[in-house]
Image 1 (cartoon, rainbow, N blue to C red):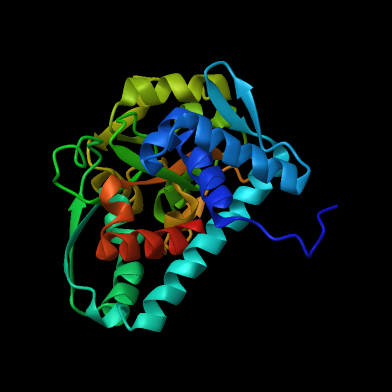
Image 2: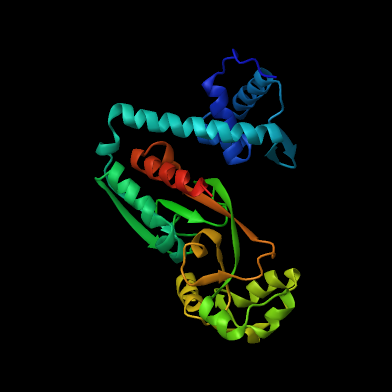
Length: 296
């Protein structure tokens, strides 16, 4: 058990946090402008203070232990709280100005971002927020956006990514459609239903086949590369469509089918440039997004 009187060096905490978020000592060292041996000693010192192992090496990468994962959650909360306190104490919220571009899928841009943007408008009225509704992972690298909400972690070394939540999705259809075509009681019943395609339908079928879905391309009678358009088709009764739970549950006239079916899990990553650590406005927007998106 950790002695509650134990004091910790914030440099050690920062070394642990950066290593956990970057995935390796070498990447963390570059991020903090330190040498890898120095960073390694700081992490080791924290492990010694706590009396637990925080990382285990898997190949060339480091993976958090159970204890490390638990500590990471608390350390992130500490960092975010400290940032908020600093902003409030110095009266900087009202002084934050400039433009910040956020890119997210069209579905998230319409359904999830507006309440977050309202909070930002209140807390930092001089901010100018642009929303880039796009699924293109290259938006950040082309400097078309400052912060991205994505379902995949970027590989580019110049970007910082934080996993904020493991979200869930299910299959839904309009009540109008289900009243007309019947409510499927088993996965086998889906063979006789229409589906609305979103994006790459063959790839979607590859994902659904291991789940036992007895459907093929003929079941996809409508679809769109736009997730927002595909969801509107579902709402209008064109067929069954997958959707993130938080979006679907807030949509009237929609029913979840096969309630016992296992959810589709997908991560939500917040990604930004390394200016996160130097730009006050990007930091504020990033942390506000993280606060909202972390909530179930």
